[in-house]
Image (cartoon, rainbow, N blue to C red; front, side, top):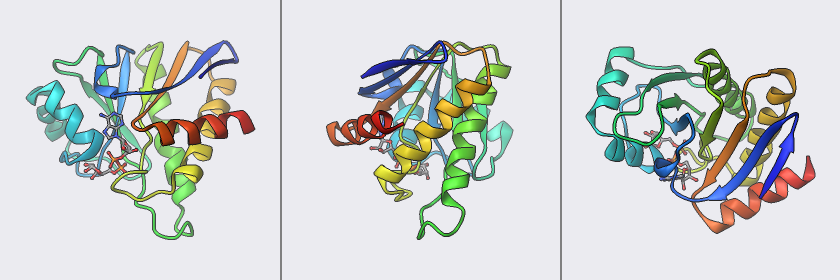
Length: 175
Ligand code: AR6
């Protein structure tokens, strides 16, 4: 599914984010930037050790924020490591922290002069965020950001399953 909002192409696809050729891809990282499973493991495996070396130099990143590194051997130019919240019960600032993780990633992309960025569904794997709620937060945050900030031409969500894609498509139609 693809739509244009405020001159920015907003694209939802099913796929493996490590294959994306956007200027940056976003990693769903942890605050120690220590690597792990899920999309984080896939990005470090495919991109090689240069990404972890850069993460070690940075040292860490608070929940709700993001940092940018080399993309090593990947087809993209940069990896933006965003740290989403662990979902508890929805009453511990999860929505705000998830929105901040998306917003900081988008700000970093613009500051770096990038035009295109691909996101995974942050926090909805190991961190347990319900996908329908997370899709609303992600898409509301991105659409509000591109309304207020110029510079990007493409924002893509790369969903890992057909079901995740359907949930994101429904959330986008509601906006
Ligand atoms: N491309 C796109 N999406 C993917 C890929 C991929 N190659 N692989 C998995 N996903 P998760 P989190 C989806 O667990 O919930 C790690 O250990 C996956 O199906 O990767 O933010 C980190 O080190 C799910 O929909 O991230 C942290 O410790 C989404 O990516 C912790 O997990 C996010 O799932 C972060 O947990």
